[in-house]
Amino acid sequence: MGRASRSLLCLATALGTAVGAVAVALAAGVSPAAAATCDPALVAPSGSLVGGLWRSNGGENSVYGCPVTKEYGFAGKRGSYQEFRNGKIVWSPNLGGGALVRAYYAQGKAVFRWSGLGRDWDFFNVRWSMDGGPVTQVKVGRLTPWSGAYSIDPYCGNGVCSTTNGHEVNRVVFVVQGCDRGTFSSDCGPWSIATSVRLAH
Image (cartoon, rainbow, N blue to C red; front, top):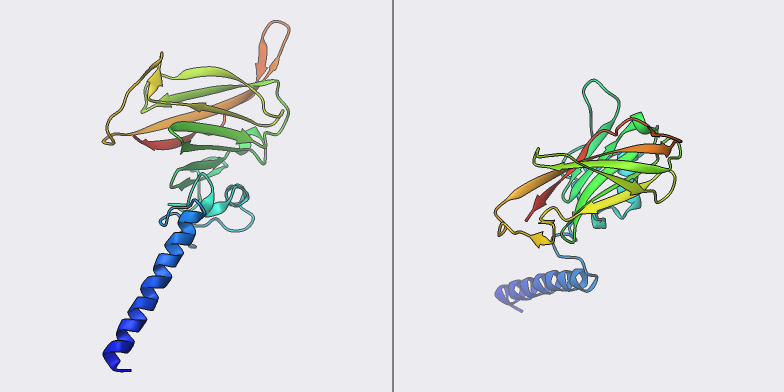
C-alpha cells in the first residue's frame, strides 16, 4: 500500500470515528456541543456546595450545563456563586449553612429553585424582576419545609406573548424568603442572596 493510500485510509478512519461519536451523542439526546467535556479549571472543587449540587444534578449534562466562570465569593459577606451556560447557582448561608438558590433557563421559562434552608417554613415569598424593572412578589407553596420552586415565562403576560427574534438578551433576578403563618400576620425570615439567569430569546 502506497503512502497516499495509507493517508487516505487514516483520514477515512478518523472521519468515521468522529461521525460515530456524533451519532452516539444524538442517539442519547445530547447535542454534539453539549457532549463536550467542561473545562476542568472551572469545575468547583470537591467540598463546594455549589459544585456538589451541580454534580448531583448531572454535571455537564444537567440543566445548568458547563460552568463558564469559577466559583467566586462575595465581597464583604459570606456566600459564593458560579455562572453556568444556562444559569447560576448561589450559596446563601444567611438562610442556613447549606442553603442554595439557583436559576436556569429551560423550555422557554426562567426556573428558580431553593433548598437547604436552615429551618422549616410554612410558605415562601419570591421576588423577581427583569432587566432592573419593577419587582413582582408572589407567595409560593413549599415542596418541602426547606425547599421550593417557581418558574415564569418572562415573555408572556396577561395571555399575550412577545418575541424579539433572537436579538435581545434579558436577565431575570430572583430572591426568596421563608415565612410562617401567624394569627394576625406572617413571621418571615431574611431574603436570600440574589441569583439570576440570562435569557437568549
